[in-house]
Image (cartoon, rainbow, N blue to C red; front, side, top):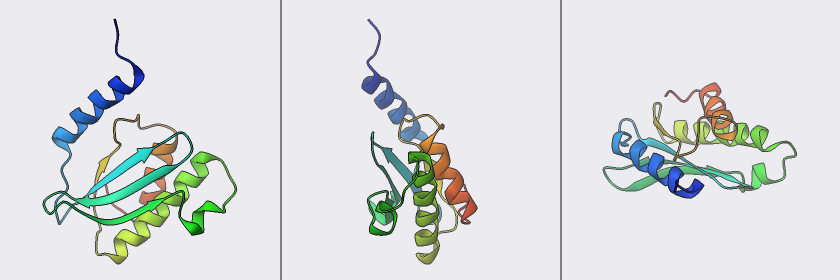
Length: 118
């Protein structure tokens, strides 16, 4: 019998996390995508600290009308601005087991447009 959708995603997530590791110079940009919302954090794995975070539930984004992909682009731009204020220029992208497609891709492109390098 094959893997369920969640088991498959968790297997991919573990495979990505073996390689992706956030340092102080290049923290990890971790994405979590639920059915309605999208959340993103910039994490320094050496210290185990979240440097900055953004989500589609933030007050400045929550009132915005648009598709989920358009909102994900706004979240990407927001996290890039917050990261640059915190002194982060480059990150390691962790898509969290999701395919680089749709909302995850929109978030990444939004972060790149706002000046984050990965």
